[in-house]
Image: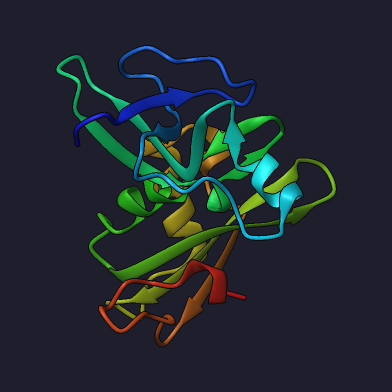
Length: 167
């Protein structure tokens, strides 16, 4: 869009280079100036003139942007960022999995732990089998510590899994 600048920023507001994941932040005449009568919320979502969208993404070498996940849904495991989409993409590759939703849950040792909610395609699927599958394809801290099998997952009107409703 004309007169619009988009950047990928780290937690400290520093610009990141191509291929680095951070928060998509924008400035331009069409971007809101802040929340009505909510100065603290406004301050929390701006980095200078840049509005922090809450979307995590990256810019490729050609200047195209890709959304990776939502910042609020990111899981922090022992200081490492885990994006639910990354874990979901691996789990759904398992032949016995119909669909999956991943979110974080509190954990005394690691701050948060990865929790997967799975709808089976084949009833013979076990937690151990799924974790072994994940260990072959994911870094150890991304492997779900908890697996919950469900008959169905909560979805929006357009069929998107609602992670916030996974409990």
